[in-house]
Length: 212
Image 1 (cartoon, one colour):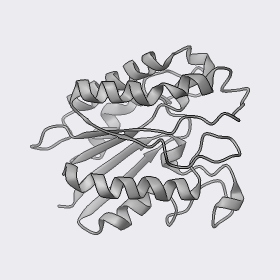
Image 2: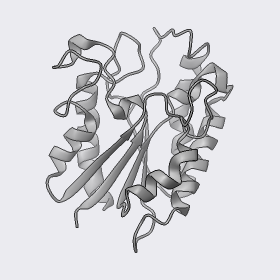
Image 3: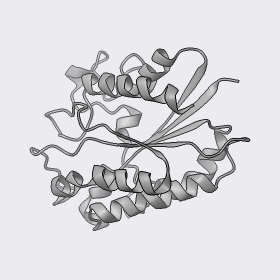
Image 4: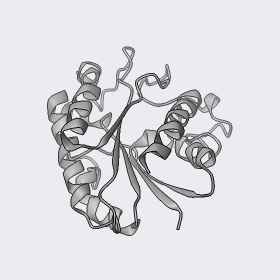
């Protein structure tokens, strides 16, 4: 059986494109030649299966009063069980957790990631192996960001998320990757560009084989 890698994330895993000019199909989603998940699959080859689980707006544990089923925690059991056996779970979340309506600082967002990690470890989706999790800290939201629905304070809070995730990953003995240098766009300042997807795929293509 192929090594199964499940990618759990938000719009940056789904492949949302804020600038249609940056996407080959000129749409709102990068295509299968552009998304980091698909590029990772290509780089790793046929001995691996990379599965996308990206949902725009997804948080770690924070229940969204506007849209239902946005927190990964509440769907973690069914989601992980539906994709078993999992050899590696990649979690790339945190950007949406900074929304004003959640009233969570970087430390609380880190606590949310830790709670999600603990839940993922508890689900019997790993076959005969121990849980194997990689936390990817997304780039911080850019300084030009403003979105009335996400609210105030997002930029400042996002600056501290990566360090909190690093601390949590070390404490939970899971793997960690900081995607800080992967390019975010200059349109909404919180989504990967096509180049950013390629950069993230390259980083993961080097790291993932060492974790399996």
